[in-house]
Amino acid sequence: MAITPQWKDELRARITLSTVIMRTEKLVKKGREWTACCPFHDEKTPSFYVNDQKQFYHCFGCGAHGDVISWMTEQRGLSFIDAIKELASEAGMEVPAPDPVAAQRAEKRAELVDVTTEAQDWFADHLRGADGREALDYLKGRGLKPEILREFGFGYAPENKQALKGALSRFDDHMLVESGMRIKTDDGTTYDRFRGRVMLPIQDARGRVIAFGGRILGKRDGVAKYLNSPETPLFDKGRTLYNIHRAAPVSRQSGRIIVVEGYMDVVALAQAGFSDAVAPLGTALTETQLELLWRMVEVPILCFDGDAAGQKAAMRAVTRALPLLAPMRSLSIVRLPSGLDPDDLINDQGPGAMEKLLSAPQSLLDMMWEYERDAKPLSSPESKAGLKARLMEHIDTIQDQDIRALYRREMLDRFSAFAYPPRQPRSNSGNSGYKAGGQQQRGNWKNPVPRTLSSGARDLLARAMAGGQRASFLSAVIAGLVRHPEVISRHAEALSRLARLDPNAAPAIESLIELSETLDSQGQNAISDAQGYPAPPEDQRYSFLREGTSPGEAREELAEAVSLLAQKPALEAAMAATIGRFDDDPEGSFAEQARLRQQIRQVDERLKAFGRKKAGAPASQD
Image (tube, rainbow, N blue to C red):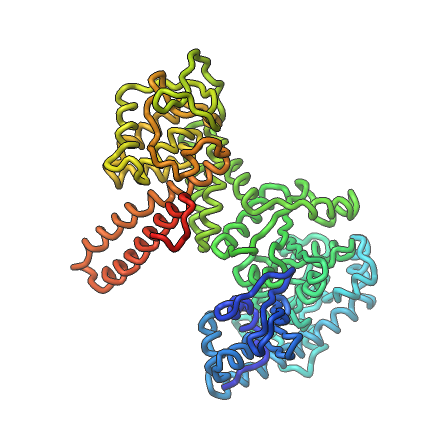
């Protein structure tokens, strides 16, 4: 089986080492590394380190050292082939076939690297020759220094369709075509791809030249300003980041990686002292490129123009990243002044202006909120509802359930504050705050503005809060929402879903939502009237029912309670629908029922744990 070094490099790039090790070992984050007690020898003080950026683990106690493949063979006890197969399956890669063809392909790629390497030397020589004078003057006119030209390998492709073929005559013409250096027409003739262009080599993570980018001099009608190599056995543009071989080592020191739109932006930043910049190659960021970035730092900085096109590009990257978000893995965004690229900003305002922007990037969540908020006019209830729908559509793509829940809560809070701005409080007289048994209560709702309830609404709430069991979970949540009506609008979607699925809860929930629409959305006033209805449940185990609870604590606990309350009837409804289709799809229905039963059990356990936690009882009690 021909497992080449290049194939193993690709496999390692697709697998996060710490994720694999954490399946059997408890790792603790320490700076940019993970640490644990070594699994290869007994120790009490952790000396085992895992570095995802460098793709290895190391124990300073016993000297154990290796990568993800050696972990599978040495710690899991798998054979090399079995380890390769398991990791390849996880990474979505095909294991090379056990025949000489794979070895031949690897050998061909090595030969193609020879082609691109010699082409690079030839381009660089021509930049400093007589026919490269115009190109060199152009680069100097852009303010590029000689040392930057040498470091990045700038060159020049002369305006001659057969010049490269003559210079690289030791290689067969089909190799020049396969490496992307020449183009073959339908009639079989070939000619140089790059002509009359400033040339810039594109290198892989190991620094090998695998492709080129070329920029024309001046303007020519019908000719693209920038031209990149096509995809070849060496070059997959969706898996390559320009300048990664230089930026990766620097990022380990700076703790930062900057993603800009093009390779000339990378060069301009490097000359200004920002050596930790990379760029995609003519495409939006791909999942593979995002994974490469996250291997270097936890929160890469995306740097885009501040104009509409730049913001669309930033949003495309955000959309691509959302399903991949994980704990300690996100993105941040820097928006340049409209009409300026990094080179312009640095030339106009100096490197300090760029550093200032990079030091205070915008979060992914802020970017998403502002982009969608400003995308369309929000002058009607329908347009505001559209904003909410767009935000929730984005959030629903997040695969990590904890991050999805946190994003949802934050976005709903922002939407509520935006869509339901505070109203001027209505003045009223009388001592009619939230009462229980005719006594004025103290707490967050002290001296509330009285709210007049209709007798029907008052009766509905009173019955819901009493229920069959006065201290039931539903009764407590209803009572909590009565005390803290400012949170009702935030949970209107979940409460409405609960009302549809639970007829017993529907009347009280509908009354609460109707009442909340007449209240100051920022107020912390209990819903009450002069008669003090309705009284709270006697069970005071939940903090949102107790006196003296801070507003923040009450909101957090109510949010968790509403979420739990709404989940079970939704799962039960899904179970009923699944059972209903058993005759049409018995196998699928059976599997879905098993999954839903497990989820219902988990919700039941969370409900029990919630009650025990709020009561202050040990977690092991029933």
